Length: 244
Image 1 (cartoon, rainbow, N blue to C red):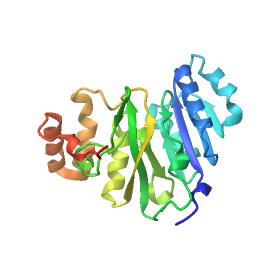
Image 2: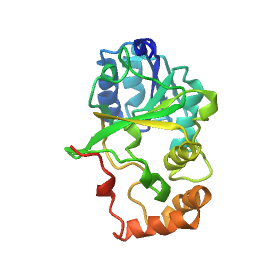
Image 3: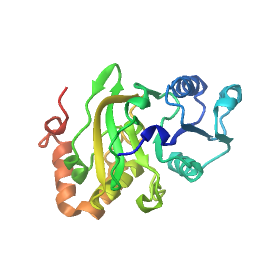
Image 4: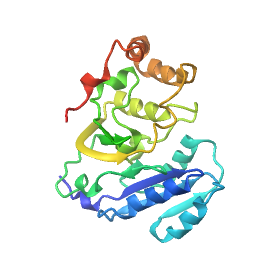
């Protein structure tokens, strides 16, 4: 056991032309009672009022930048390269914390050396969505929404998002850590409320090709087959959800 109140938590917010959502996210972060936080904002060169919002709260920020990027995963990688915390979480503009993270990083919290991800539940459209167990990763589902995951920031875990494709790099990262047999810890807390489904959640079959690429790379044709079975309703995700 170790004193996790000493853990530095890097919170990274990606924003582009969402000034209203950005301010909500900033309030969510700066109102945390857990104070050992590094707060980083990566703005993609917004043309709305986002820059004014960032400057309004810049005394609460560890670092911010506003410049063009090559997509959301490129922006996220910028944030990761700047992060110096023990743990990293992405809370993008419009998304907010639904709990105080001191509930997770408290004295006596067991932090094993093999632990790569801590994850929990989320709220979307006023509904609590329970996280999944790990098995669905093998057929294309991450076990929780991205905003409800803390990643251990150590070089051996290589917390970098692939920029090979426009979509599903968050899945690729989780799948990569999973097949390397790192530990994932579920905590029964609602960690985040997120604004929308994210760029990888409402796509056509054609746009899902990157996901099938990653599934095949890490889990073979069996994983792809099970993913299609899940997509057409033969395999149900609900049986993998943690109960209320």
